[in-house]
Length: 135
Image 1 (cartoon, rainbow, N blue to C red):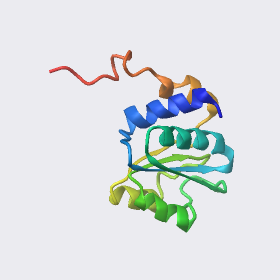
Image 2: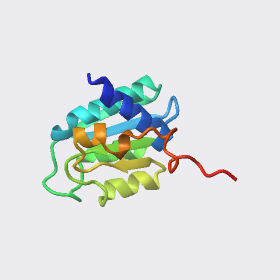
Image 3: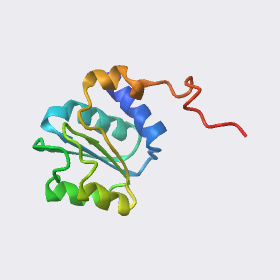
C-alpha cells in the first residue's frame, strides 16, 4: 500500500471532510481508480471510521447512475468519497445521499499524480488561504 497516498487521504478526510472516529465512511471507486479508493479506505480505517469500500464497473459517461447497492449505501454513510473516472456529481444517488445528510465529495478523473502533487496534497496548516479567518 502506498503510504504517500494514505497520508494525503488522511489529510483529506480529516481536514476537508471533517471525518470523526466512528463515523461511517463510504469510498466509491471504479476499476480504473481502485488504487485511490483503497488508499482512502485505509486512511479512514486508520482514523477510526467504520470504513467501507465499494468498487464498481466504470460508468460509460458522467451522470450515469451507480448500481442500486452503491446508491443505497451512499444514503447510509456519514461521508461519501467518489473516486471514479466519470462524475457521479449529477446523479440521483448523489442528491439522495446528501439529502440523507451525507457529506459527499466527488473526484471524477482524479489521477495518482493529481492526488500526490495537486492542491489536494497541500499542508493546510501552512497554507494561509486554508486557515480559518481570525476575528
